[in-house]
Image 1: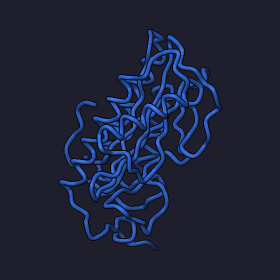
Image 2: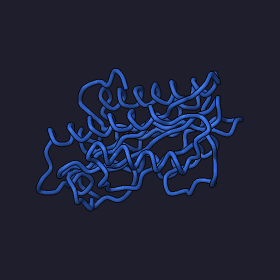
Image 3: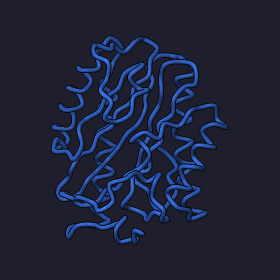
Image 4: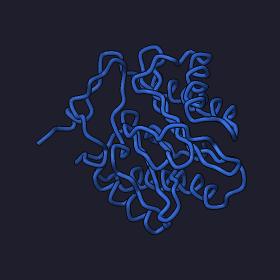
Length: 228
């Protein structure tokens, strides 16, 4: 049976303030990227734009690849290649997922955005964040294991009318860089109560009928996260 230190090992440069700063910078970069994405843009162009913005922010070095998903590609989990040549429509949805390294610390930020006025897409953006907050609050209040958290998340997503995708987007470790954690699984398979500052909580939901999804991730913190 794995011990807590096996699930949550860190390197010699781990520092909470460093983790909080790379979190702030990563989230800022995601919003800067989103502000420049427009209808008519190809997903591949969105990825190139994201790379350019990360370079401007001093965050081009990363521990995982840049992921930008448009439209139907928002159904796909990390590691599942996008269908090529997808163009962002006038009423459409997209998400951004970046894993920058700042100085000695790993960041990870992912969020969904909507262009136009499709009400179900706007609902997806709002409710994936609401789901994330509910699961994060459950962890802070009930102190349950990662496995139990994602069982709770699945029930909550179903109650909201969404399908929760647990394939490769159900939480993971993060720490100082370079870092090869002993535990390579997802938070959804962890049988410990996760600690703050070393886990990314991920929520990826899919519409039950229409061909799109929504994604949100953030660092697990002791304090409540009130806003994006």
